[in-house]
Amino acid sequence: MSENSTMAEHQDYRSGFVAVVGRPNVGKSTLINALVGAQVAIASSRPETTRKAIRGILTTEHAQMVLVDTPGIHRPRTLLGQRLNDVVDESLSDVDEVAFLLPADQEIGTGDRRILARLRSEFWKREWKIPVVAIVTKIDTLSPQQLVGKLVEINDFANFTELIPVSATTTDNLDEVSRVLIGHMPVGPQMYPDDQISEERPTDQIAELVRGAFLEELDDELPHSLAVVVDSIEYPAARAELGLADDGKAHVMVSIYVERDSQKPIIIGRHAEHLVQVKKRLRTPVNRILGQKAKLELHVSVAKGWQSDPKQLERLGF
Ligand SMILES: Nc1nc2c(ncn2[C@@H]2O[C@H](COP(=O)(O)OP(=O)(O)OP(=O)(O)O)[C@@H](O)[C@H]2O)c(=O)[nH]1
Ligand SMILES: [Mg+2]
Image (cartoon, rainbow, N blue to C red; front, side, top):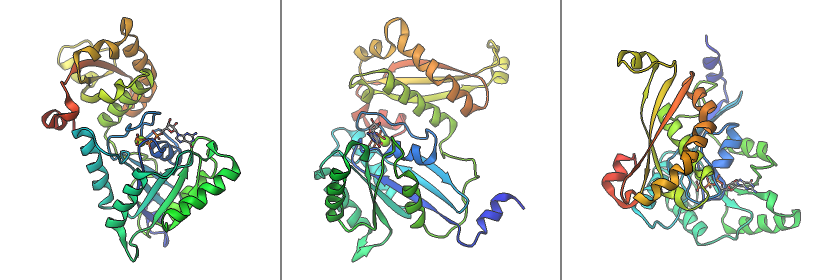
């Protein structure tokens, strides 16, 4: 009997899906990475970083929790923005629990009220139909006194199932977050192997890593205009068959799309410095994902106004 099935039969083993929601930039992806203990979702200082419902998997001896990262809920300005909000709706349609993130360093605002209304319409009928846990993020930005005031304010905002403060950056109270979220999950079997931390396919994982690396490399608003697709992975044996040079590496063909011609040189950089840096930064993580030496081949193309063009959005996987 495998270790998995032993665990799955554990009488009060818990498992379930937790949708992690909140306004853009409140720290959803950072918290998921901290809980899972690996970079499963990209995080950045710019709002609207997350575009897909990426699932991070946390497995303990007594539970398996699938954390569903979601795009920040916002008032959409483009068709992409609408699609991102749709992603959140889909993520909410089949979860066991919701974690609603509110940042300690900002006031409760219209955005939060809109999210609460959305959660109420979906999950409230005299009481919450599933647990809705409020998580106050970035508590490292407040003094202990300020934090007390903040917790009172959020406690008055809605009657959440539970309220937990956390800092993903300092890991302050992080264990308590997983304990509480797991505590509210239903009893159920283990769904993924012990060592699986993400549900993404390698091609999608690499595409996200490339987008994340560009977000770090570029320091203006341009990153919002980027879309990244891994077109193919050519493994050494297949390359040899095609008569291509076999350097023992898997070649990962990546297309990077920008919205306008003028953005191309900015993405590439002087002497292709951005491309070089991104490849360097990602060498180890990409090798790890593919389990072998790999080479990124980055091609920058223009997909005119893709954020508002239904056809282009579909082609880019939205
Ligand atoms: N000080 C502090 N900053 C944090 C903490 N958690 C996240 N951040 C920062 O907040 C910014 C946004 O983090 P993300 O995790 O990308 O936020 P998000 O909610 O996933 O954002 P979207 O995907 O755009 O909706 C980043 O600059 C993080 O470094 C924290 O605990 N403390
Ligand atoms: Mg995010």
